[in-house]
Each structure stands twice: as structure tokens, then as C-alpha cells.
Amino acid sequence: MIPILGDSAPSIQLISQQEQPVSFEDYKDQWIVLYFYPKDDTPGCTIEANDFSRLLSEFTKINTVVLGISPDHSQSHQKFCNKYKLTVTLLSDPELKVLKKYGVWQLKKNYGKEYWGVMRSTFLLSPERKIVYLWSPVKAEGHALAVLDQLKLLQKK
Image 1: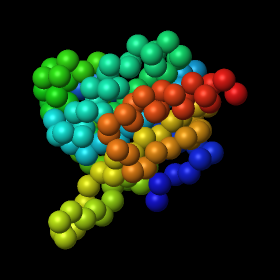
Image 2: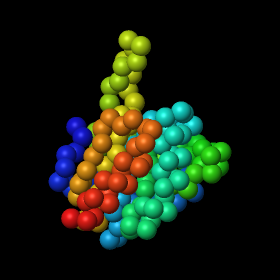
Image 3: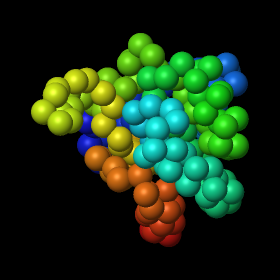
Image 4: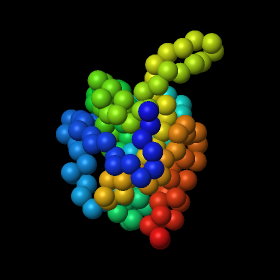
């Protein structure tokens, strides 16, 4: 089940594309965009990662970090980042621990076949680690800009 608005965000402790451990404690007093995506170097995921990377300086200006999570290994993330010159931090969850905590590991259907996979979803977390906004499912194109716009609105309140 996907956590809902106002819930405390489930903690994370994963490895980045640089093989570094990452947890929420690394981003004290910052907003966090936590986006979940199915697979490195696929069309929708590439659009989303490129858009978040292109807008990363805008997120940084308003005290926000962007973290992408998929079940791919860190080496896959590394290749993906190098291929597209991505600047976002990508985290690896091959054991599906965080994906399941956030309820994004779901039974999906494509062309009549059922399979388990990541439901593209994004959670916006306050510095207090409350879920203040969420998108699920997500259409990749234009999503990063929509997240940035929503974040700016929430920070004005």
C-alpha cells in the first residue's frame, strides 16, 4: 500500500551510483523528491532522469535534493548516468526493500500479461520527512517540471 499524504516517510538506506551509502540523515533540513522508476535506460525512465537532471540546479536553489530509486544495481545506474550525463542521485534497491515500503512494487499488466514491477511514482518529502505530495502513477514527460512547480507552491505556504 502506498503511504498517504501526511504520513511519515519510510526511511531509506541504499547505495548510490557512486557505490556510496545514502539515507535521509544525509539530507537534514532539506526537502526531498523521491522518485521511483522501473528501469535504467528505457524510454520513459530516460526522459524522467534527463528532466530531473536538467532542472537539478533549480531544485538545489530551493533546498531540495532529488533521489531516483529503481531495482537496478549501482553499476547499471553508473552506466545510465555516464551515457546521458545525468546529475541526479540514483539509488539501487535490488532487494526491493524500499520499493515495497513505499508500495510501488506492484502487479502490473501489459498486453494481457501480468508481472511484478515498479509503478512510476514520486513522493515529495518535507524537511520533517512528512509526505506532503505524491504522484502515482506518473507520466514521465513534463513530470519533473510539475514536481518543481508544486514544490515552489508548497514552500510559499
